[in-house]
Length: 314
Image 1: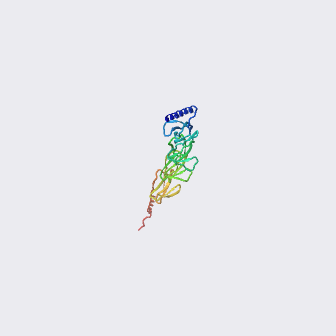
Image 2 (image 1 turned 135 degrees about the vertical axis):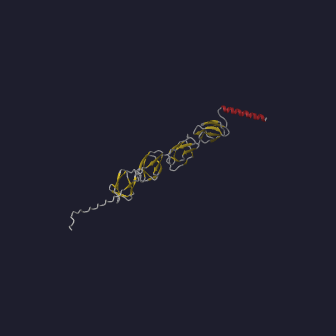
Image 3 (image 1 turned 90 degrees about the vertical axis):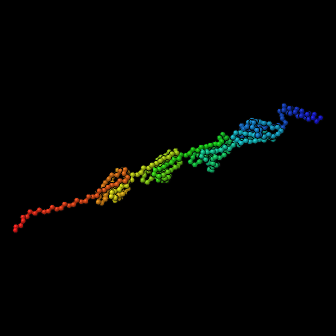
């Protein structure tokens, strides 16, 4: 009797289900559309790998709740629970996966017009729906803007451009280096600095002719050899002769003098014949030999007087 009663109930339930289905209504049933921001995400049964569809995705909820995974490349997976109390349209907001921002060399990261950096590369950066612009800064390199958005590669590698570095090496090693038109000493013997526009440099050293060079803003090394001034050490033999040039005394030999062109020098010393020589700076250590004044010739002896008187008579 009981079996017959149960059988009748089952047949009745089946009949009602068929009737309701034909009528377009299912018991304990709800229509739900899963959408995502951004759209185009894949929908899976929770924990499974077979794709059910792509958002916006329509599904039906019967008498039990269901869990779905919403996945999209570049975004963090989200899970949604649907039941009879769920709204007809459920929006799942996806969060973009952060990307690693890396630079060569390491650089500080700034937001536009920000005074303080967000951090230093490499750094994991949040990704937003709208593109965001950041500025990378490193000493000795040009600033570079980088845009991070949904289409950015992960990791995002940025190479910074090195600013032009010029190096000046001098001979002699104690030469001083100045910017043309400035008295500020930049360096002695060697100088390395960043040059972003064409500039002139003046190299100076005692007893050398100064030299000016103009350098373009590009990485380079300039070796500058200054020309020595032709200082001449005038020596007399014997030493101690007075030396005059152009009628003006310059001192007593040995004496040093700058000789930049053919110059007549006069050497004089008591007891010696004054001597004039022409110096042109080729010989840096000329030795001038003076000749002694010859002794005076002796005066001739007087001749004896002639006598013409006759001898006296005896």
